[in-house]
Amino acid sequence: MISYLQSIAIGPLLQGLTKLVGSPASSVWRWSPRGSTGASLPARLWSARGEELRRRSRNGSSLAVLLVLVLSACTTQNSAGQAAHVVVVVEENHTLNQILGSPRAPFLNQLASRGVLLTAYHAITHHSLPNYLAMVSGRTHGITTSDCTGCTLTGPNLASQLEHAGISWKAYMQGLPAPCSDVAHLGAYVKRHDPFVYFGAVRRSPGQCHKVVPFSQFATDLAAGRLPRFAFVVPDLEHDMHDGPVSVADGWLRDLYSRLVASSGWRPDTRLVVTFDEGTADDNRVFTVVTGPRVRPRLDDTVYSHYSLLRSVETLFGLPHLGHAADTSTATIPALADTNNL
Image 1 (tube, one colour):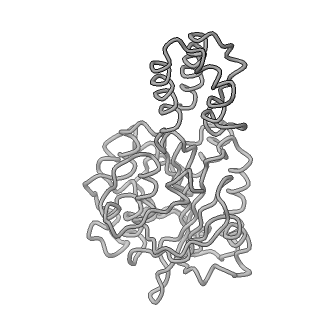
Image 2 (cartoon, one colour):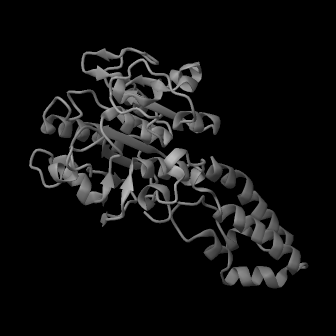
Image 3 (cartoon, rainbow, N blue to C red):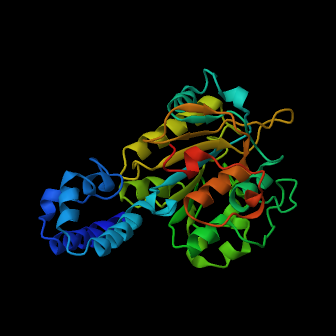
């Protein structure tokens, strides 16, 4: 939205400035929003023709002030304006060492080679539910099991943050029978992997609750060009490595990735994050990778956690940090949070 507003508002403003000093706009610059091909706007403005423009100005100081204001508007967008989409996919119950190099997970290992592999990313605890809650609220809410299917939680959460900020979002849950369903277990779907429906603020708001949808809606939204800015994707038990084989889940991820990259939602600043809710009793370091069109492949050995994931998403969208995501000890993931450091 910000880039669009720049193209229709700041471009004409600069044309007006060049007319003020009698220099044809076309000989000085051509507007393109940030992220377009070609030289940056400052480079185009402060060219040899820019020197001529300044010499011909009748009021050089006023023009300089106006140009500085325009350039500031162009180059100091917050990260929420730059970001296209973030897609987070959560798998189940495997450590980094169980996935990295495994012949049963060829696609996940391809992603690791294409993106940023976080080699010291840890789950928060055991079991599943508190880890999912940590990802979207920065807290485990004192829950230590996955049996709390009737719990209703208070306090802020990522869904409500995004909603109040006007940032589009959806949670795509494989096997969920209907949007906003509160069913605890149906087929291979389990509520304990669906964190947003535990929050009373989400359930009481039809506008929020009906954004927790069956996974089938993901393909529909991709085809219609309606992928939200933030998408939280959870496979069912047969496709998340909980009950089904690793190879089946790996193939499911490959299919999701193929659909995503073929869609209009795969933009220069789109990021796909694949992580796991937890590891094993002896090792809670889980496989986590961040990839996208502009993400440079590398290893990142900084210590991260699910709180880091939340913190980074919030940073990217210009939101305050919730719970332990706000802790000074919680590191931000540059490959996710910083569009200038991909």
